[in-house]
Image 1: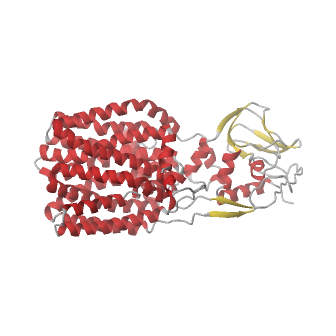
Image 2: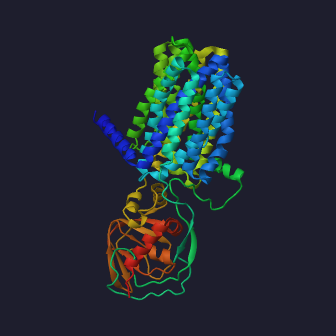
Length: 599
């Protein structure tokens, strides 16, 4: 009971934190409106397709639609990294709204089914960049790494609520007022979404910024004089240091709306493949993408087997698919809360794997007991598993991939997932025709489970790698790093090396070349210059930055007074973090100014 109470409290806190952030609130409300309309629309179109051509028409349309989305997604997601992300989402909403309105008109006038299928497929293709854009924009809007999981969980929970409300609403509206009106409702929800997204604060322009008086190599103009007793503050306290000013072009992080500027522009086709290259080079991302794809094979197959389950196991006929979707939606709401509540459990990878397994195992339940209760229970359990998979997979990618290719990484993943869905929707009708619904569900469950279970060995190791790095808390406490975006700060912390020192050990020596920046975790150290004591340093104090920023030899000697634990960051990683952000660079200059005596 205590653990359950803690989980509920943590979930409530996470949701409150997310909705206090105006940008996250607007994105989630926009997503809620369009997602409800989209699920209602999908239910209406599936029912319409089944009435037109039966289960084969549904399977064929899903397969063709998903294959085309597979081709389009990597190119569409490239736009997420090349164009303002908010603009991509708004444009997508408006385009899909216009297409939905046209589909409604065609269904109303009883136009040729092929025309409706083509436009419905085009609407799906137009949606290709939307989810990669949402996934890429979220890390730029959160204020701390743990908030990212909460933000993903909130989005997934809203998606789950939409999955609960949308299909049921679609099924009821189709029965009461017909398919065209459901499609019109979907068009209106896209307008709602676009209007909210336009209010997401972008915060500024992304561009290469000219920074005056930046750090330049060379020792010319450098003056270092002894200043015993002067220079207050912990760290590498020293005498005056003057470096010549220069103009340097550096990149600074963009706003939530803006896509990063590529350092080395290349052709559009090559850029579009960057997400695939990133995933392929990283064994952890490869594993997550492969396991996730196994789940979406079942998701693609569900478009076919759910309507067959509705016809064979419920008294509602084809309209029962909306109610099965709603049962899945109820489970997904609970699963979303579970995913948020487990955000601090540090089991992102294994929770993700468990979620995938529970997309498959419940199908056996419906296969063994082909009755209505079993069908609804199976879909409910799958619903619980769905956000656990989505939230943890998204968080793993967001915390692993670089922001410069974030949209394309999610686009590549979406391509793999859509391709797997296409495979599932193509194979399931053939299986049902060959061995019947019950054996088809059994085969699907067994094959997916066997494919996923061996991955848990590596998933367990990934848990430790995804845990918050120990040095992150130290970096957060240093004002110089306060402007750094949380995910970037986490990457910096992962690059730091733990060092233990003995009493009397010299950490840096006056006159040597600077190669590292240091932060003290525990212990006491003393900074001296020409033998004179400049300052005493303790836990939380940084030192060593001046030699790196001013490109001069070490201007002080730092010695351990007692056993101490330090965290060190290599020169290149430190300079990337400091000089790549104008505000961080300014704070670093302020820190140096406080340590250098004024004459």
